[in-house]
Length: 356
Image: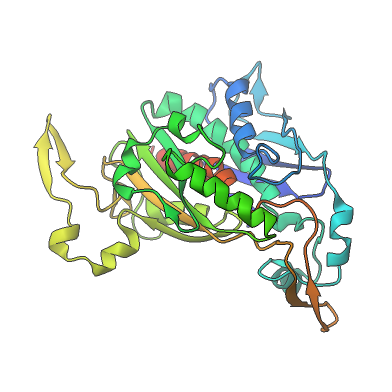
C-alpha cells in the first residue's frame, strides 16, 4: 500500500534516485490558507545534508504544488505535489545491482516483485518520507483551524545507550528540540548523542534510537473502537516509516510488569471536567482520546547501510561480502523526528474528520 488514511488520504510515489517524488492529498478540507514558509520549514527539518550527523546528500526539497490550491487556499480538490530529486549519485550503487544488502529490503522486495531498484533502495529508501512531511505540514495548517490548541511535539529520546527521562516528556517544547543537530531537548544528553554518532561515522558503523511524541490539547472523543483504534492507526503509520521497529503508547511494555492498582488512571472532577490524575494510558482508552495528552514512542533500528565489510549473497546465490559506499545517515533518528510529527498530524486530522 502506498496510501494512508480513510477520509483524508495521502498517496505517495517516487523512488530515491528517480526524477521526482511526490504525493496526492485527497479529502483535504477546503478554505485552508497554505503557509508556504511553514511548509518550507518542515521540509528543511527532514532535508538530507542539514548537519554533520546526517547524510551528505544535498537536496533543496522545494515543493511544487500541481493542483488543489487557488491563490494559496485549498479548494477541496485533490492536492498533488512533487519534489524533484537533484543530487543522486546512482553510480555509488552499481555494485549492489547483483547482490543483497544485509538487513535491507533488497532480498524481500525482489522475492515479492521479481525486480528491484537498487539505486539507493528505490521505493524502500527513506527519501520517500519527504512527501509525508509536505502532507503533514498541510495537516497541521488545517488543524490550526479545525483543532486549535493542539500541539504536536516529537523529539529524540534515545540514541544508543543515551536516553531522556520519560518523567520529563511533557515538559519539552518544539523550541527546545531544535537547539541541536540530534533534536534531543536534554541539553546534557544531546552532546553525548552527537559525539556517539560522529564516532560511529568514523568507525563506518551506525546506531539506532527512539523518537518520543506528545500531543497536548487534543479533545476527548477522537478515534474509533476495535480495528480502527486511535493507537492502532498511529502504530500503523509509525511502523510504515523506514527503519521503524517498535511502537508503544503510554507506559507501553512497562505495563506488563505493573499491577492494576499502579497502572489505572484515577479520575476526579477538575474545573468541571473529568480529569485523570495520572496518564499511564498515554491519552487513549478504548481506541479513543480521553482528553489527556497523547504520549507514544517509536523505536528505530541502526542504519543497515554501513561501510564495514559484511557477509551477504549475490542474486545468483553465491556467498560474498559487501562494504557500502555512498552517503548515508549513521543514525536515522534526528531526521525521523519531523516524519513522526507529520504522520501524527495526518492520523489525528483523519480521525477527527471521520468523526464528523
